[in-house]
Length: 399
Length: 119
Ligand code: SF4
Ligand code: SF4
Image 1 (cartoon, each protein chain N blue to C red):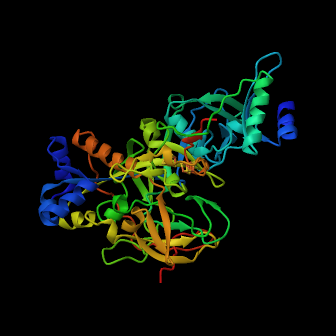
Image 2: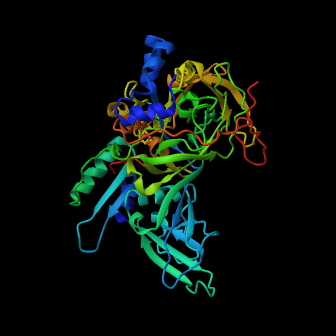
């Protein structure tokens, strides 16, 4: 029907037709998929949710005399330094703590903070305290470095997130008798609440279930700037059991994302902290889907009633946890689900409001001519098996 | 703290200090939560006023910082009175103050620390 080159040509001429994923679903319902697909060039999807498998690469730039960093803390958060002399990797879920480097930050300043907050502070233009010790060698004589950095004063600063945009996830509940503090927030005992973290029909990868129009090299909206799909994400599990509409019944595909943090905006990058679990990073990510043919739009037309997730009991801390079966996203978004005949209130963890805003922001960037689509340089693997060790999540017994 | 001691001893009123601003040779300020028999509470407050202590009543309220809130909705799942809800059209957080019982369950739930109390 149309190619990405043709779509880009229209974007440059200001003639591309771009719909948000919500508009696309409404149009497909109203006109039918065939007629709607003739009209639209690009559908924008977006999400805003905690993505703890994220982090930032920082290259400080060399000091004089030069240092080869052995250990480094940024506002009390340990950054990995085991590669280039002044290269650092700051993980979003690394906890702030008083270290051996004599940090002046203590107690309240460190509490409930972590790598996600430091990344968000740098993107917001704030200064961050840096303390590092060095391996003293003939090339790098310096033993210590203490300074403040900001995003203007570091050589390079980009996000490289090993796992984002989970294609579907789980619903967490607590069937035990004490409160649990999880990465889905507090789960109250005796099925007191249920938390879901994926946004169903808004979720980028559920609108391209077989990853046919996105792949390695796809340009995306990452934290308000431009990013790219760099690789399959960690725990990428495309072989998850799927419904006839090709959407997975539990956690499935994931992607690794990369993008220049110097261009990102604080509105779309927020540090967060889950009580008694730890810090993370909330991130706005938008994925444009080129409507190359009718089948692509047909997948984008999927509705919450036709998407499901497994309800998982967190009171059993094992890799494969027992489930209470599948529920649809339409049920989850209604505010309550029934589990074993009981009414359980549901709450989301991803922001539906800001996810919608991401899709709108990406649509506007494309309409303004400032964001062209890219042809993937390689597909994401479709047959990656999941080898368990101590990581859990993808393997869910839904029988 | 002699005041809280007297409250407990003379009036059987328990005082839970929420915030204290006390410095030598200055007028101090205490925010305390008093619990006890209703008549004894009245007597205790009268006694405090007799001692020249200014007493005013405040009730604890939930505050939501709209600049910080990301409208994730996580707090809505733990709110027993459904004071916190997501608007069904805009999906923005709404807070119905008149239903709130200030149980404070929502405060630690918020991942961006947007919820606090006025005290
Ligand atoms: S204090 Fe309790 S009742 Fe009030 S909004 Fe928070 S959770 Fe709801
Ligand atoms: S949990 Fe916090 S950020 Fe989320 S909706 Fe409630 S107040 Fe807003």
